Length: 318
Ligand SMILES: C[S@@+](CC[C@H](N)C(=O)[O-])C[C@H]1O[C@@H](n2cnc3c(N)ncnc32)[C@H](O)[C@@H]1O
Image: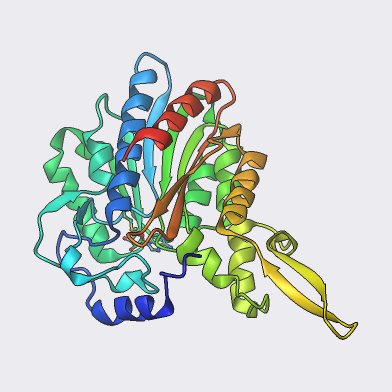
């Protein structure tokens, strides 16, 4: 990781942000947030346009839906990119921008259905209010309060025949909340395209300690996210370096963020029809990689065009 992402920076950030979100505004992220949402919005437009004359029932599923709004961060407040506890994000009076839910609701041609999943009761309330704002879509907006992993796994299992359905799922967690079993359930439908924010710098890289000694609870979190125990051998290498005194020094070498990102994208490729080979690295203002925006396509038939569009957006937007 870039040395400019010091622990001091993170502490600074945490101590500056105390309150939880109030009202519509939901504050998170920096410029990379705009890039992420612009890529998503462009993909959704391309997706519904491409499926406009097809027989599928289409859905947009947002499993970490937020409120539907976001605010721009005030640069004078200093960096917030490395928030350890981003749930402590502070409200502010700035102008409201569209979050992912509103971007989906504004997409033309429209989806047949919108499913918004959110853990926070207050944010669900804001999502419910979107029905008033989008009256023509109101009856097709389904807000579900609950845990993203449980809700998505249940949703995938409930539809027995996915062949008449197509959906885009956006997984936009703050950290390492997504579980591999959820990703497997999504991939198994062969009908859902996935945009996923992988917590490269904000999550995984910080759980992988420099010494290679990782607390059990952190290992468990990585097991759940990556769906295997084998990540340790992929991310750490033991080197034996000769010393001046004819002995050997043992040195643990940790993987780079690039290796970690590639490892996860390869895992995705193993269960989906295909993946965008170069996920977008979302950097903070100090050039630290925070997240990877990954894309995976569900259906073999639609894969080539979906990947072509996603690649183009990942390379050019923002
Ligand atoms: C980064 S925000 C999502 C922002 C949203 N995609 C947007 O663009 O407006 C993450 C959201 O996930 C919610 N969340 C956190 N953990 C969750 C979980 N396990 N299940 C469902 N929602 C969760 C948080 O309350 C928060 O609103």
